[in-house]
Length: 151
Image (cartoon, rainbow, N blue to C red; front, side):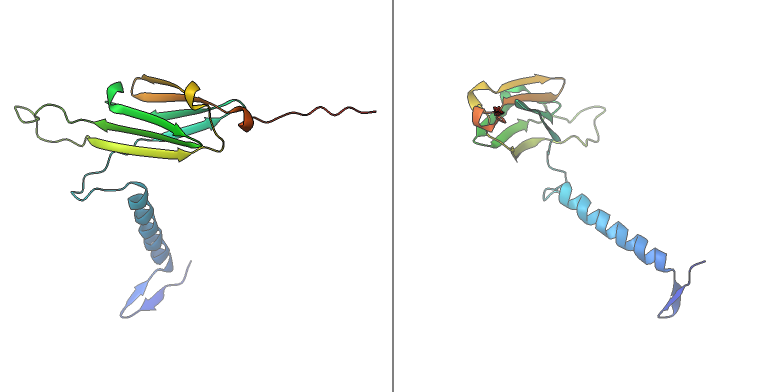
């Protein structure tokens, strides 16, 4: 059994203080990782995944409900940038509509890759709300294997 601590005119369980602190830290990180716009509605911030093998980087970006024409992909050196905009649908007023948590607007994601890529060889595929990018590494970024002759 753990001891209680007297705080002013009431007894407090020290573990409650730790639980309160943990809740505060969770709220801090949650608000930092999920930015909010001024009107309280969450900003559009697609999830991003980057994988690497010896020859290329494979990037997946979750952007459901977007059209290909609304995406802009660029590579400069080691920086990959994906921009896009999810446009709001036609008027939502009418019979049956009363609430929506869908997010609309533009987004901008940039990620610095560990090595340069061949920008002219990048492939982009968009299917089922997932943007898949294949970014071949530049020749100078690939690991070189040197054979040593033993005499």
